[in-house]
Amino acid sequence: MKTIKLSERHDLQGKRVAVLASNGFEQSELLTPVDVLESCGARVDVITPDGDSIRGWEEENWGQIITADISLDDADAADYDALLLPGGVMNSDSLRTLPEAQEFVSHFFQEKKPAFVICHGGQILIDAGLVDGRKMTSYASIANDLKNAGADWRDKEVVVDGNLVTSRSPDDLPAFCKEMCELLDAKEGGTRFATAGAAKGKA
Image (spheres, helix red, strand yellow):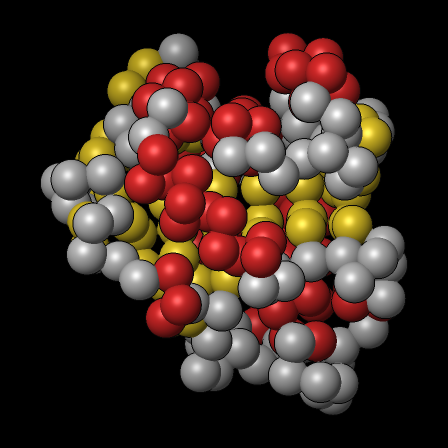
């Protein structure tokens, strides 16, 4: 998959990004954004419910095993500048039912920190009560769930609503990663490459 060289446009040194995931995460939706963030200088921690390694899902088969950096119980959301929620049906179904996961995710919305959510990742936002009135997109199969929870759902490759960036599927990763880096870069207060990402939607 082709992605623009975002490391040439963004300097994310000093930024810390939390990735919350469990078994069955959509492999490309975790690995590609993490690679982009790290190439731009951000520190990324993979957080899993028990601190155990997790395995991705790639098309119709199990994929790579990813080592966790920290467990959800030991992670402090206040330590992070942004949150990434990859998709994957099994991953999202397991996380959405965990009160501690809902609490962790809610911190980023309460503190108006960037949240990057793709595919089925938005399901945990529904259970945490975070989608009402938000402009969002997602994998098509959960569109009605988001609408029923009050989201203003759009069928677009990427939707930016304030500090929330959402996309539909792995096909949208180039646009997703571009907006992700622009928004996180802009949180410095106007860096050399910060552009429209922070200006779209409401603050």
